[in-house]
Image 1 (cartoon, helix red, strand yellow):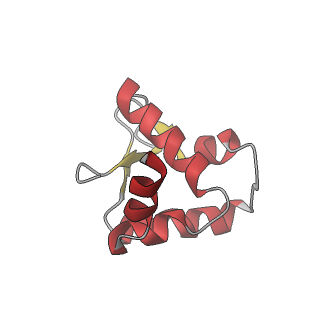
Image 2 (cartoon, rainbow, N blue to C red):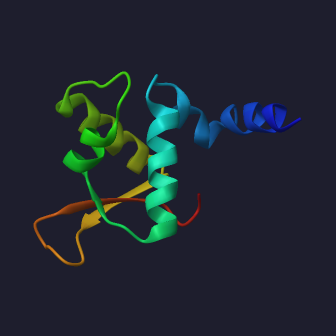
Length: 93
């Protein structure tokens, strides 16, 4: 039952792109966990946290920017360290 709901969610047009990569589910789980704890993750830190199907950092940044253009992520300056580019889930997600 829950698998059917998840499949329907993944096929929804705004979220379809966020789950089309092999590391997408792991990425979303990390982002949800950091959102719940209020932690700020940098792009590089987030890339290092991925354990499976890791890709080059440039391609990963490009993928995050695409997710940001779909308004699924927000990439902002860090609260504690201004040079940090913090990645967070969008409020709409």
